[in-house]
Structures are given as C-alpha cells and as structure tokens.
Amino acid sequence: MTIQNNHVVELEYRLHLDNAEGELIEETQAGEPFTFLYGHEEVLEMLVQALSGLKVGDDFHVAIPCKRAYGDPEESAIATFSKELFKVDGKIDEALLAEGELVPMRDDEGHEVDGFVVENTPEGVTLDFNHPLAGEDLYFEGRVLAIRPASDAELQAGEASVSL
Image 1 (cartoon, helix red, strand yellow):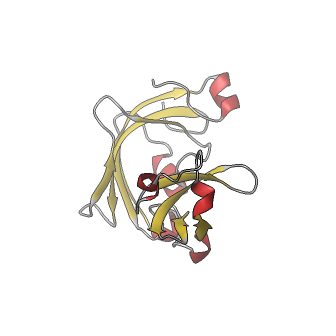
Image 2 (cartoon, one colour):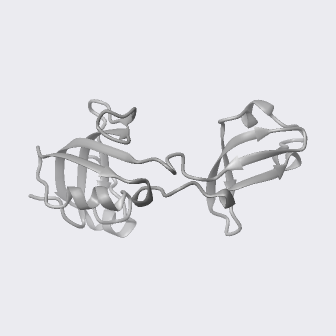
C-alpha cells in the first residue's frame, strides 16, 4: 500500500532548521508517531508532495523554504492590547503575560488564535500572532511507519481519529 489521499499515515520524523545539519527543533518520540489523514491540509504541501507514493519503511528527506512553509513574519500580525483585556476576576496574572508565553485569544469571527508575548509594559501587552516558524527554512527527515485507508468517520471529520 502506498501513501495517497484519504489514507491515514503514521510517521516518525525529525525537523531541523535550514538543513539536515541545522538545529533540531522537533522530533517524534519512540512509540508516539505523528498520525494524520493524508490529503486533508493538515501538513505542509511540500511535505505532502514528498510523501506521495511512499510505502511503509520508506525514508523521506525534504527541504522546505520559508516561503513554502509558514512564510515571512508579517508586521500586521503583531498587535498591542490594553492590559485591561487580560483581567480575570479583577486581577492580571503577570506570569501568564511574561515574554515568550503563549496567550490564546479570539479573532473577530470567534476563532481561537495563539499569540506569543513579545512585550509586557504597564501600558499594554504586545502579542505576535505569526507562526513560530515564520521566516524559517525547514528540513524534515523520517520514515513511514504505517498506512491504512481512512474510515468513513475520519473522512467526514477530515482528520485521523486513532493510530494504526
């Protein structure tokens, strides 16, 4: 069986910045593979293309330039908010607003978006809503561990429900 649309795929992988010798920033752990529904926009397009047609046991290596990964950081994705917005029961938990902390927010349509604190001053909190890997070239290497056709429920949900 080969990787194709509407199949659940299990991978082990390592993600480096820039190239195979670049900083290792993420990897799957033994017994905890990355499982996803192939062809349903859960994975970067260049990685999807590199996986197409692979079989269980096949290795993969793919370099993804910034523009094809998460793009360049955008100034418009950085915003400052009044500290009043962060009050809960009349208090602000400053530890939750420390530089580098992830702060879940809601956009105008009510969707949850994550912002990272870049500055916390008495006047306000500046959050960066760019993807943490915006501006980075990526390099994936790994191996295909399992493949199976997706169930009707998985296809309807648009995501894999269980590992293989």
